[in-house]
Length: 246
Length: 246
Image: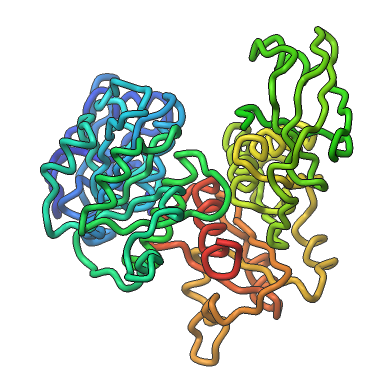
């Protein structure tokens, strides 16, 4: 079995020839010092994973031929991760972790207390691809452009549930008639999103707005304050273990 | 309420004077530009959290006086995190995350496939202190010196359960008579540890040895391969949500 996995755009199938782009040729033949005859695992998010043999190795490109399918295409849960961007390195981590944890879509969200006003979508997408290559997934999480939270809630698809992680929810009566939050295990399966708040917390107006949405499921992540990247993994773990594919 | 939190060695109590060490004086007065009259939250892992006022601010030291207790001392679950050190930045992350997630002890473990043969315990301990300062905890996770896995298992305290995260456990019949792993929710509360395997996995001998221990609870973290730092947060989340203080 190939040890190196690459995500490609090209269709994959029995005997299919797959050209390599310059960057990937540089990585495979330059950095990893592989050559003709090497087996590489390829996936494209549609056709599963294929064991492919390098048939041409050059400095600026190369070619592989698909020999056999090693995994069928997987269909991850319909889960979005929504998060407020933070410092560059930790934003990169959140994207990497969301991809590993099986999120289908990664949506950066601008809240009132979000510091980062811009993200580099292409750079974050590259991190998601790299995480997919490394974690053995056959799909790649899609990274979206930054959207304001208000806008996102205004356009919210009514059949998608939203798990909101907010330590202040504990103080607010919400959910069941006695004020206790509805347990996640009672929630419907299907389309979901998980929202991680900004490090400065949600604003009072944002909190009120989130509270009033029927699709919102508030969740608390323990008695300590978690950094946003820790909270992202913890929230996705709870979701995957309760409603997802774990 | 003070925004800056500092972990100190000195006893804390009503009216108690607390000297500041050089590093903390530099941080508080140099980096953060605070001075006399500033309120700072102090904790030492024994006496809870205190609001303290700066009464002397100097370049090489300073002094605070405890004015009022703002939190009682918390007693986190008796949970150790055992992990095989990986690359420096990710090892730092694991320690930071374990501290945020409320581990009482962080134990680096050398397995057959662990690359890092040395760790800097003092540096990792400083990361755990910083994480405690930032996450609002009143206790600090203790970082231990690197120990070989064999040694650790030979000296294992018999009343401590061990949750082992290993994707290969799925293939091995272990646990209940029909081969399904025992569910964590059936496990006893009390003293626990969570073991995250090295990125290269456990060796066959290690796996056999872990399998044969009555205190081992194997857990699988989903169908994708998680990096060790992601796995640490995911495993601690499962444990905290099922058996801990969440």
